[in-house]
Image (cartoon, rainbow, N blue to C red; front, side):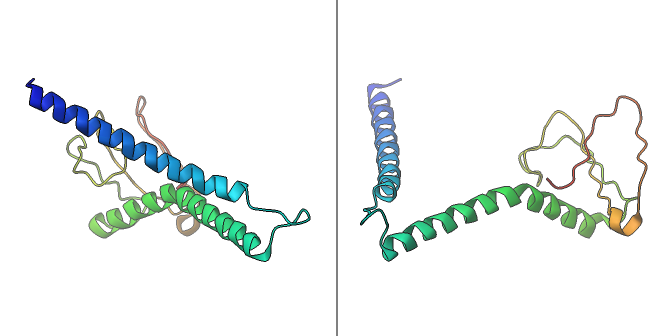
Length: 143
């Protein structure tokens, strides 16, 4: 490696490290500010109470988003599959090749051939699934 390239890499690494440090500092100061809100006779002011309520609502919104992501992802795959191949418990799209980075499936495993079918037990009632011996697979209730 040339000296110039080494120097450039060191400078880039330093810039990233400084950027991360400043982001961490900014984050910790936000929570430090919340943790050190002043109390008057053991109580927060109305303004500071509203600040903490806003923070609580923000944190709950973030958690709701994170918890809903897996279900929304599977729902989107179901909708896309039904639009392309049709709807019903008897429809089972099977990939012809192993998945790759261009496949629109979240966190695909490139070591297997995928098939994804979707059941609606409310519409079709109870089901019995028969699979060949040695077949690997999962049933997922969107969570």
